[in-house]
Image (cartoon, rainbow, N blue to C red):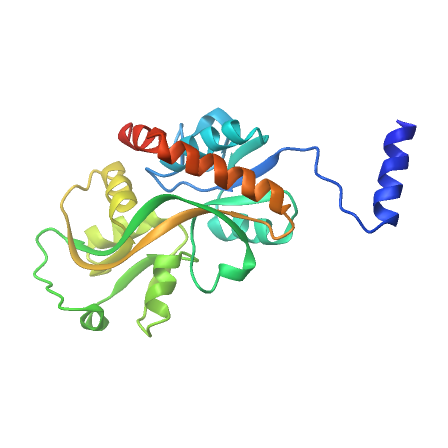
Length: 244
């Protein structure tokens, strides 16, 4: 104990930072099939967090020999801000945008996410480009990169705290279009018994990453990236994706 205190004082005196003894805390939200709780609730941890990205990051942490705890919470804005503010935290599955680039340290890509505009299957809406969507009422998830993608281009988006609310609004005719992920959107819609969705516009294919607090040691980031690259080269990522 005395030796530990001495080393701590010595490190602080010399301006050095001590490596965290605690595991990294990797935060996420319900974004099926990439990350989700086993129960469907908005709180879960460790083995109760599942999905493509969650399983990949478990394998990455194990290969890198880095302790990682997975925690799923709601809403996205809360876990995003916590990762920005607190050392030892990471966030997934995160779109690596120009606006976010300098805010985090990055490991990835861990998966790819197709951003689309959905209409109801029987909707007559036809779009030749994003600009055509201005004529319609669009619903999106508050704080989400896909919603921001449209806002940045001057389109109006009605935002909801839960993406499942947009499914209900689309079914009730309260919105005409829903900006979401092709994979995650269909998964969420099926939970509401909605299968008849049609992609009317492809917006972007986003690579999803693990975003780490800026104070994360570069050595840790490099170990995680090396482990991810090794797993990808060995075909493990495709095996995990195939489960979902």
